[in-house]
Amino acid sequence: MAAPLLKIENLTKRFSGSGGIDGVSFSVPAGSVTGFIGVNGAGKSTTLRCVLGLHHPDGGRVELFGESAKPSLRRRIGFLPEERGLFGHERAREAIAFHGRLKGMARTAALDAADRLLDRVGLSARKRERLAALSKGNVQRVQLLCALVHEPELLLLDEPLSGLDLLVQSEMLSLLAEYRAKGSAILFSTHSMAAAESLCDRVVMLAEGRTVFEGATAEASALAPHGAIVVSADVEGLMQAAQQLSGEVFAMPSVMGEAGRWRVVLPRHITHPALIAALAEHQVAILGFQPIKPNLEGAFWHLADSRKPQSLAA
Image (cartoon, rainbow, N blue to C red; front, side):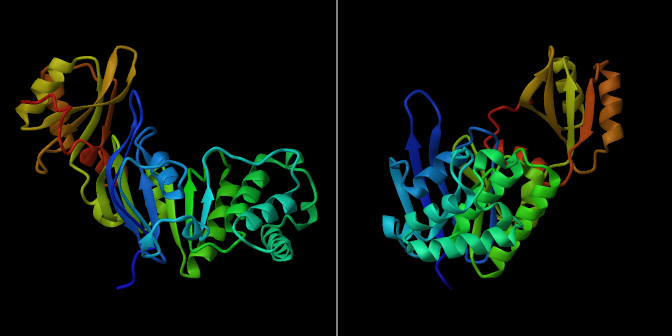
């Protein structure tokens, strides 16, 4: 079996105060689109920066293309950061070629590659315009081309679809599909579970700086528990209703006024109407009720609570 293009083992990076990662492990096989998912602050960007050599990890190991990571191997990576880094005074063609030269391309080859890519996305007529004159969607196209110009074997994308309209998203995904068809691999970092579910054949889930799942997307979705998300200010009544049905209650992020969001996990044979009836019996005022779907989002919260530190049930 061929070595994965990226392999991370027990990666750790701590910062003073809080944050960082502690025990991140996963791999990215050739030809795959691997979703790297978790809420904001889970450690996704920190992990990517360690892979790229922008952070020096405190522990663990990063392998690229079957070898210990080093600068020469990182030239074979393309990277689209979440923080867009192009300057408004740059011209589209020169910006793309510049990134190619940073990866070792000769000037003529980099300019030729920039011309081909700009033509592919319909921007050849605007290749000499300054980026400040282009729309946000076109600047994002140029940024992606900067990551692709040297034909990398591994592409790291940090929230690539953030803030883009559906048309630009569709065009970018088409370009990424062509890239993947050549046998290259993509690590797609996002906090959007829906995007990961539609785009990725594998997922890696991070929670509080740790890997909580790695595997096929369908396998992850199948781990979603049965239950519902309930919004209520009556925590005591909610707990009593859940315990009556042999269920558990977990706190979730965000509040609505004085009410909180609670994930109620139930045995498979307990129906949602049975939960609603139990809540009514205990006179729990419900401000929101949403059945947990068998998808990545439902699985993520279940796996993130695998140690169950937030369980409110006995």
